[in-house]
Length: 109
Image 1 (cartoon, rainbow, N blue to C red):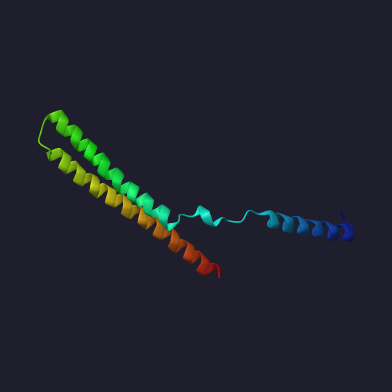
Image 2: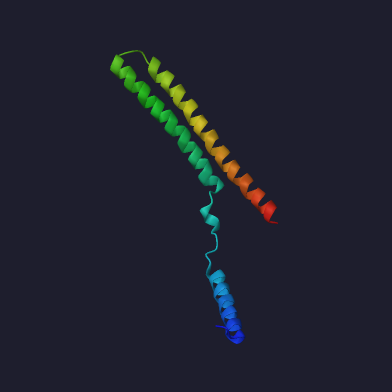
């Protein structure tokens, strides 16, 4: 490999291989990201799940202790609060991702 002609041919081959690999690189798909509808459904499901779990726990405790629906009301409200907290956390997560993408685009440009 001391021959300069062989070195030049090897460099050309490496450049062609690199170009071919770049041409075959998978392009990022647009549908991999959450659409706004998917995000909205995720938040609705989180809220309803919190309410449902709170309602179920409250109803179960009321049935177990034979009390008035005090636990039902209390745990339903706690479930609502937990669902709202989870929704806000999801919204913050999506906002952080968008801000990171914008900062990356700004730095890259």
